[in-house]
Length: 431
Image (cartoon, rainbow, N blue to C red; front, side, top):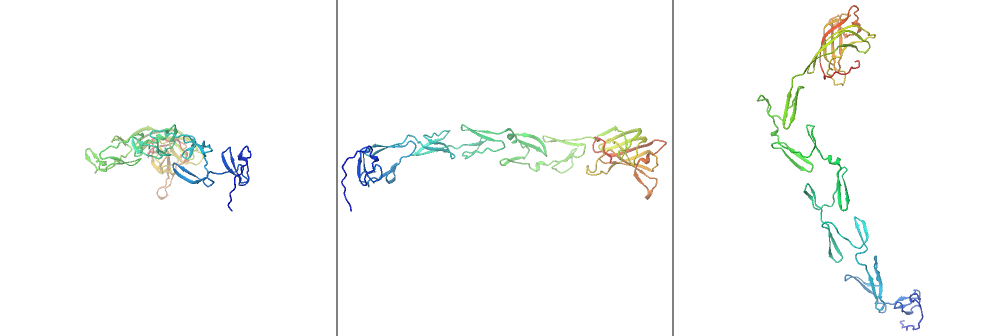
């Protein structure tokens, strides 16, 4: 049942009342802390009796007049440099000290901590401002950067600038950005101008499109479209003032002796005469196997070359030979290489003929002829047998036709053929 117990008035001396463990429900006064305490039988110093008889120890906690809690039983002061002390135990005052500034604020950039316990923040930079909009709230204003290309504004509020290109780099130093464009990357920005595949210039900085009705537009960045009206491109071809054709869009100059050079809108056409060359050459004989040699009494030759048409005149007189194995005979060392009808892809067909005006051989053939081998400087020689009609024989001239014991064998004739180019080749292997 409820009871009322008088306080025990006896005095006991303790150096520190906070170390006393009193009897259960025993009440005592601690003069050191000026607090009234009650024992629970186990806690050193007992339990402090709050003012008002226990139930009134509730504290209402506010922040800037805004109630955080109305039933707090304790307050814990935290934070770097924040301290709390009992100012006046008789009145229950507690002094809380919060160091000035904003100590303990962590400042980060893109999630990386720059300062963990900043006392102040200073906003710098052209146009950067910090404004206190309300108690404890600061707005930071950073003006946008205006990006221009050749003084034309691309954007006034970019979120990012990305520098691209092979070897292009950007570095930051003291709020300054340095962009480096290597020479090789700069050179790659040059324009090569060609006409029909022929380079006119390899490093131009400007293209100017001229001509009646010629226009140039930029439909998308990096693309230039040039429009040349069709009507202005026609040409009327005349000879001595007489029109040869209706308007044409192209003129093609053909022929070895015709050339055209274009310069600043003017085409210079040059027509030259057919070039003619006269000269001498030394005819010789050779076996198809490459074995055996000839002893000459006479080797004479002249030629006339008109364009690519070659006419050769020759005289050969042979007094002996050293052919030991069966071989066919060729006339060699023409002054110009014959045209190759297969362009080196196979055995070329003959591109010219040899006609003998006079000949003397050991065996008496009815006729001797020859054909020029394309791509070479050689002539294959053929003899025609004594028979005629279906039984007539034609074969390569060989060493058996050159066995004339009492006199030399002689060939005087003419060779005509088409040349490939004016430069004679080196001696070729047998064929």
